[in-house]
Figure 1 (cartoon, rainbow over the protein chains, first blue to last red):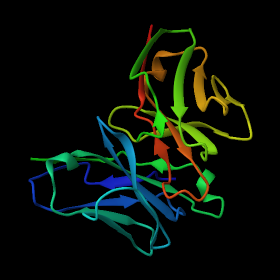
Figure 2: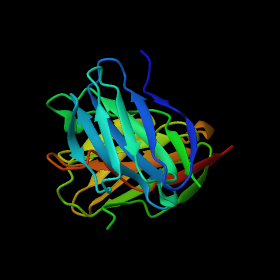
Figure 3: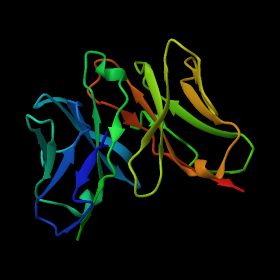
Figure 4: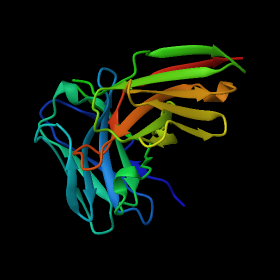
Length: 116
Length: 113
């Protein structure tokens, strides 16, 4: 079974631009979560999508948004990029069933974003 | 305010010895804990988990201990192998919480031959 894939793997943008990252979950997984990893803050939860609806949300500004499609693929968008948005963005998928809060999440390799 | 803390940024052990990675948490509502391992240029990989109704869970060379009264958990790797060299993240969940997983900042383990 193919793992979680993320595209692109690397991205360079300048301040003020916007960026869209893509995540394809493991086949059959309906939950997709996004995390930001920075050296200073570690891994921080951005949001979770399940069946095209945002189910959980972390403490990030509204510049960070996402969506999920009917095939469970998800995109994350960051508008008006700031230098501090430079990070590794990870997506994780899980089945998303009723006991979802104890499900194992499977992570993709991440997209490394550099904002200049 | 960091709810999950891994106070040791790095740990170095000799091959064959025990590695002990520690994690403290502040939110008493956390009821499920996980350890993830991360190699460079890869996403985190699930290693082992423990529910708050248990105080120990074992899987091969990996054992996680949970001390609820101290709000502390630890991961023991015995015996340590060079392939275990990676960054280890402790994570926590609470049923009904708004965040899917709350992670610590990680501990970089180096196992020397």
